[in-house]
Length: 579
Image (cartoon, rainbow, N blue to C red; front, top):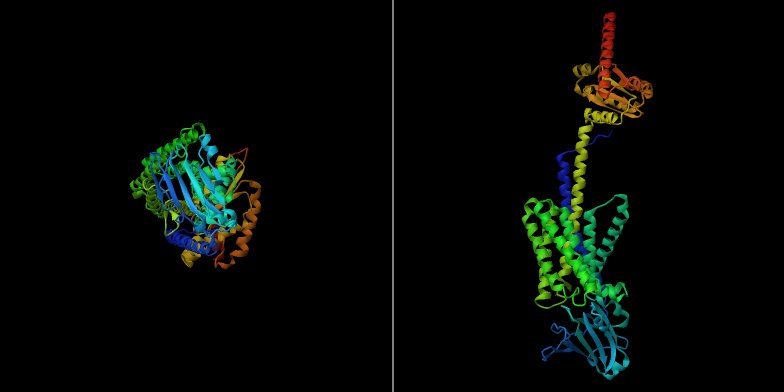
């Protein structure tokens, strides 16, 4: 057996390595973000013909009370069912070419686009007639040469659907035909790269776990974490119209964000429930996951079976529940922080705190300031995008570090077990290790076995006349000789001091071992200044005369001492005759 050593310095080294790993990952992540951001800005959608035309347009808003207002922009106030907005786009002010497309996104509205009394585009009427949501629709209106030459305005009429809480037009742009399909990527290239990576990776993990499930390889934590990452990536990409780049299915692209938003908290709180050790935290996360599940199921049933209630109409409830859940999550972390002092826990604390703050800001922007796509203008991204990236990153790092720490604990346990079962001087089984092997013989009810007890004859001579280093060398030599000679079904080990035990599950193999062993002692023991000899005692258990392992050891020990006495008497007789 190979010798293994363990000391406290190994753990301290691992802690230092772990801290360096975390710092390296964080630094590498931010450097990677900067590199990708620079690359996307250099080679991304930089066509000079892409125009933001929000400020070139103006909007007439007609309210349900009979009043109206005009806004000198395509960004108009929130309107509701029974009200309408007409966005006027002066084509003559645009640097438009034939084939260019006016692109925008609208939420849960009946939309019609006209030019010179000719309808260019319409959407949402069929869904509205059946009491269903239009969802988050990406609209592309082609501009032909006659529209450009006539200089007539393009009019976009927007009428909110019934029972919707959000209904508005977003990001009005003029885009060349060849790049119109990539409209959702404009200013969001890095977001798309990051969240599509999360989407693909989490889908892969879920698929792998599904494949391994029948084989008993199950990881509830990995399953819940991957499900959460998949849900939030689906929500974010749906919320920002990015699925239109990947699919032509308008229904999936426009509606996927809603079930993903309602579903995401469920696996998140299940994950925290599985990780929690405190009773209070477990109970809190259990209640939150159950409440989220009830809300998801209820909203889904209402979406499919009710004409009055739907995902969108319940959004205020979702926003309130998200704020409450995030705050409860934050305060739960605060209350249990004293028991969580590890590096992974500190990362999770920071992640939860930042996530709670940014998500709360996002909801305030939407509910209070009525801004549907609240963004941090300097970063061209939303609070929710940064919050989710930080939170998912913290979850991922937390999981990786906890896995690393669990593997380190297993390593320490293995080293401690090695210390318990392996003799540190010789590298073979210690007495404890021998007991463990003997227990397995008893448990397997093996009756045919042989035990040899081996004792070095000249250890006292070696220690007294040549020093303890020579004595240790003698013990190691005998152990290595046993190791070299042993090629059987069984085990061997150091019983203590200069005593060794060798056990054979097949008694027929004993003679071959003894011949090899004595030959090794004779041929390789010449390095010592005294003869290397051993006393051997043997005890065998058979089916006709079975012995317990304890009785066999005692019998072999007694036989070894008889052999040792005979050897000592013969040596003393030889010395007398020599005199």
